[in-house]
Length: 185
Image (tube, rainbow, N blue to C red):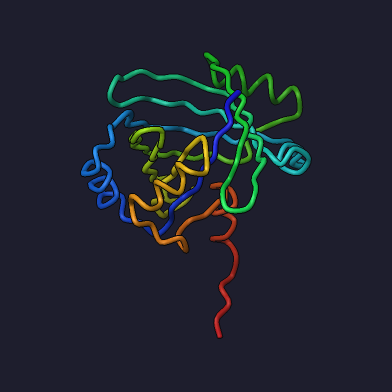
């Protein structure tokens, strides 16, 4: 079980941000091709009652060519200013078998997505440069993941990030926002 603090930085150019990370000495730790399956019941019990989401992620590391599959329950315990989560993760061997078990328990896939992620580490700060498939979320963003608020502030200052571009929303919430009609006056 891991605790994390994370934010998303929206409205960025991934190549520009990657160049900035390299310039400051951040180390490339992974390039991943990810397939994500969000699981819930028809009445959205996990989202509604637990303020959480259950995810199966098939993660292929394009540097090592190693593929791993993880089942994660991500519990949102946010407070103002950043998204705090408790992640409970276990490795699984077979997506189809896990989906079959979950189906028998009345859970199924409510969303699928494909993402390319490049991850950098600078001191204790993880920077994930994410690009989803067009259907899941068409705009690139960067996640900053830290273990304490001080490191989050340090990351924001190091990269001179405009705070109006910082979001604590999940990908599910960001995707829902795209469906909302814009107010035009």
